[in-house]
Image 1 (cartoon, one colour):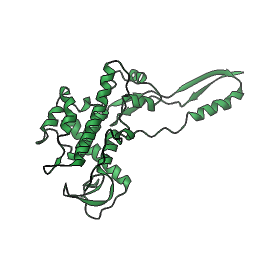
Image 2 (cartoon, one colour):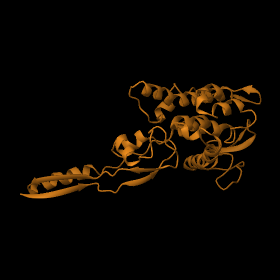
Image 3 (cartoon, one colour):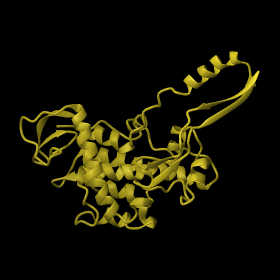
Image 4 (cartoon, helix red, strand yellow):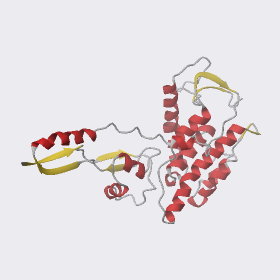
Length: 280
């Protein structure tokens, strides 16, 4: 008989940069901890629903200590238990905007002429390559490159503009941010404060006006003065996504539990969010 200690998954507390689509609840589940533990390690965060993209977050370690007085024969079962804790982690859930944009933009690995925008387009609505070259007839890319181009456009062209221009951006929850990312991917990231976008700009100007965003989104469903079914469907999907966590927050204020994570791929592609897009 002898005493021994077994250390499982020994790690130091880690510093994590918050990404688009992250929530404290989701990060707690991913790291096998609780929202309460994360909040204790981050006293500067007073509201777990209000975190900012790029904000640094301390995450607890997964260190576990098992102390026991037993015989060496139990070591094998302890090793088996340790091996079970080393299972491959699940891939992180992509943010809601990823599925929404992908659904409405489609996937084209060969360049095609967009008659609405009157420009050569490729992948998931990309009109330029990562190096800045405009897409031209005959260009070909892979599906992986199409996803990379979409992510790069969001990271370098949309998010920096939103963080600088939209006063309420850091007050929005992940689904609200995803709805605006899809909107900006479609109409351009500089819509806020621009001519023709007065209504949605006013709705985003202060927290008191945010409830008007879904209705405002529905106004932008025309191209060349003509209402397009595809744009109607996209605006409705963005409005529905925007409203998802607003409803859940209302439940929280009334003392009921709610899931504060972002909508999943399955939810985004369900009839609640999307209708088939009519393509010419």
